Length: 295
Image 1 (cartoon, rainbow, N blue to C red):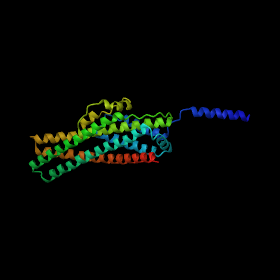
Image 2 (tube, rainbow, N blue to C red; image 1 turned 45 degrees about the vertical axis):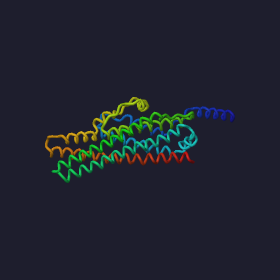
Image 3 (cartoon, helix red, strand yellow; image 1 turned 180 degrees about the horizontal axis):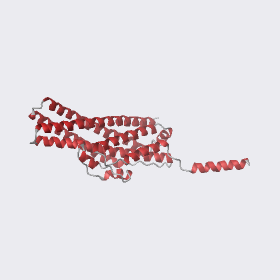
Image 4 (spheres, one colour; image 1 turned 60 degrees about the vertical axis):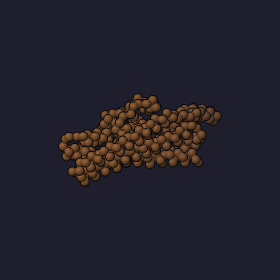
């Protein structure tokens, strides 16, 4: 009788071990954040959509940071530290930091030039020559920002081709972890790409290097080209260009410009705060990854 019970227990354990293990709840939670990012409404206004996506990235990377604290994640990374996908993960963490820095620098440069323009508008309401000179200076600085953004986007297109993590390990937890981390990088890069286009105020042609983004987004398109067309940055650039050659009332132009500058200043502050949070989180994740691999 005892032998029969033992055989029954052994058979039960054998069947249990053969069943696929369910991904850790934190992996499922990260995937939920990814799904919400993919399901963002394109009908939202440009700035609110951006704020929504950046908030979504904050929640996603906060969850990823917790994931790196789990023993199962640390064991998987340490056990497979010689695998190519771990090297790709390290390279990817640098890519995310680089593009986040590019976005932060673009916002800072634009904000500083905006403040100089606002100062001139407040001090010399009658100094039209000085004002036009400052507008010209601002538009020139915007060209510098756009050039830097164009370079950052070109670098992204060259590196995302290598964003392909895979392993010979067939452990379900490890496979789920690799799949998640790959999607996190791709979706984050895609969002940063859209943010850079938004700041630049110009659309970028689609490239084959972003096919992976489309596949991982499961047919959900973000609509960044539409965002760039609606960008408050683009609207200000256009308004300043018009002001340079406008024949309408100067006071009317100044009021419109002041309103646009104030609106954009608040938006930049919001974006800067979101990016700073993300930047600190990305650093923490990279440090955690390096600590795991070096111990």
